[in-house]
Image: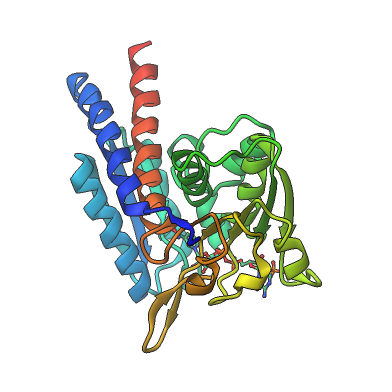
Length: 287
Ligand code: NAP
């Protein structure tokens, strides 16, 4: 039987409906959540991501502002702007859109965001807090995957989870979040011999490798939940995931499509983290 498709766009609508109530409650306290996005250079994909985030902010009643910087922007200019945003009370969340132009140190720039405003959960502070089991802002993509699993009613505690990819922003935090919920987690990467052997053991398979259709039906346990994080642009085919959707759909129990799965949910999690940051800031002001 074909897998149940987890419709990220539909789940996202429910998330926004819940956020609407929280944004209204903040409004009664004269607080409007605010998100600032810094964009250096003119990467076409970055512009699309930012446009989608701004659109989501508008839909959720959140203030958003884009701070554009030239492609040859010196690092101290961007750092000074981040310092200003860190101190701006109208801004509760800050994103630096990656990739940055080569002369900018992405690690240094990202870590200049104040921890309480790091709504992408990308700073060392946020990742360290996650490792310690006291997350402040969880990285949005793994958080989106967890939310989709929960929405679909997929059990995590006691299950075998396999994460393909070990990046600091997706794979590693994904593994930590699944582990925190009681899964036994295996992390695979480009140096893993026999990926298929590991993948086939997974009750929950999260694929974040950035390799189009890396995971095929023969690598999936019948009935598994397959969450496809990958976004691969292929000439003439548009956007495809890291999972061979047509084949795996026949084997898996659940599957997320690309586009329309983890992607829209990730944006909703940026908004959710921004609302939470505004709530925390309002609570501090009221105390
Ligand atoms: P990344 O930093 O390039 O990391 C990719 C990871 O996959 C690395 O750990 C790499 O291993 C591993 N890998 C590469 N080829 C592999 C293979 N053949 N077998 C097993 N593992 C392999 O990418 P990322 O930032 O984590 O993003 C991963 C994908 O998710 C990309 O397509 C990206 O566009 C997408 N993404 C989507 C969202 C969303 O909202 N849906 C958000 C973020 C990212 P090594 O460490 O050994 O190199």
